[in-house]
Length: 81
Image (cartoon, rainbow, N blue to C red; front, side, top):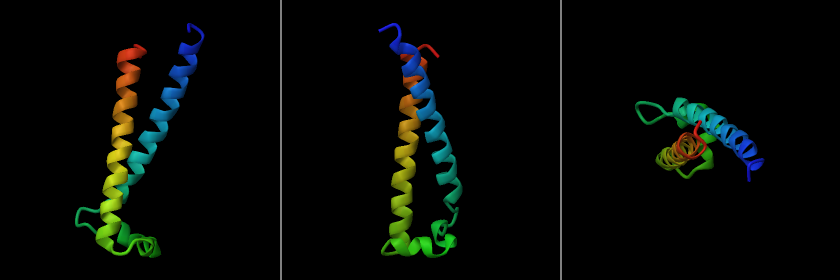
């Protein structure tokens, strides 16, 4: 178990870094007036409507924030980082 702790710490730090990057990109895609993903061009055509695109973007952002929060909690509380 002792040799597993450094591996878990590195793995959690990598997940935290990746989720932080994804979260930053997703927040920058959002627009204050709700037309964030619509400004990208044809990317919004993947969804049935612009409202659907924003709803999907909100869900993905919430999941990324939840992953970032959970990994930060694990690193801080259980691994003592």
